[in-house]
Image 1 (spheres, rainbow, N blue to C red):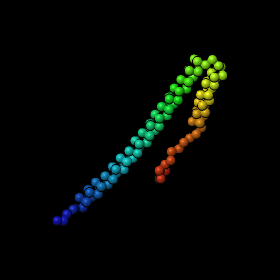
Image 2: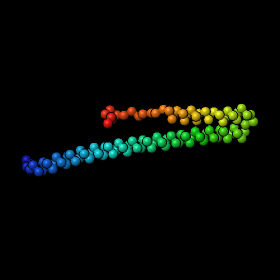
Image 3: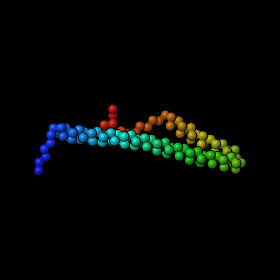
Image 4: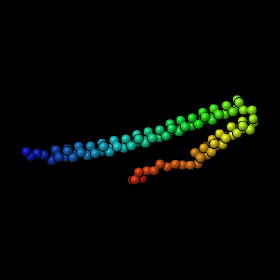
Length: 108
């Protein structure tokens, strides 16, 4: 049982293979873009949750100190330390750039 293929059938077979390879490469690129977008979204949400939690802790401690502190030094310490930490964090965030490493051959 031998197959008798005409040149047109062989050409159609090669075209189908090329189309399948092109489709696979396009879907891989789309998957990579979706993965990168999801990572950025996760980073933003993680950062937002950490910022909100930190702010809640600072506000809670300051509220307790303001309502219950009789000593002015305690009051000023509780207000000044979070301000210094916030200034340090903002300064660091605005001056440091973090680059994520690329895979081999990622340069274009």
